[in-house]
Length: 262
Ligand SMILES: [Cu+2]
Image (cartoon, rainbow, N blue to C red; front, side, top):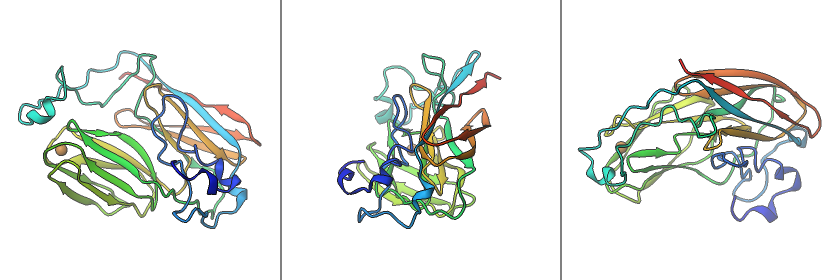
């Protein structure tokens, strides 16, 4: 969202936090909606409103222990950890909320609206032989910058179904490669051909109304026009849940989701 405040039209400002700007949430991939020229794509203002959906994803029960990762053959990554790292499949925060849940508007938006694609790229970094972030959202057509911060080979493979799969080798630290997606898809899985424990997921949407839970387990979706929406929460291990919410005017409604230990 750097360097764009003064040229963004007022009506577009409400979109800036649509990907989630609240405390404890991940960086807002869907935020920063503007084209490189600073002008919005054709999008009637009726499609943009001032309503907000916010909430928390709770976790009930004892979370399963994530598998320990054996990094013996990758000492340069192993050196990044003081204790043996674990896969981050189920991450429950100290407040009992679940991280890495992708929350998005699944249905209910007015048809036929083209939302501006943010000029800012979403970044996925490979660091310490882990993906950062592990779960994130991105708009159709938005740039995804794939970065290798490790001094060793990663081979990132995206296994989309609606989107064409790709496979990129990045043998050195500092390498970046940009890709984008052509179709909505929940979720596009990423994996590394070199390190079997590396998994990430991208939610690809034609609109900016999505968020991913982070260290507080909360999400916020802003800038919605009045309407009745189906909201879906998606988690790698525990699957998807839906909720319906009706929003009027500029109101904020809270929708919490709860996942239970199996
Ligand atoms: Cu790797």
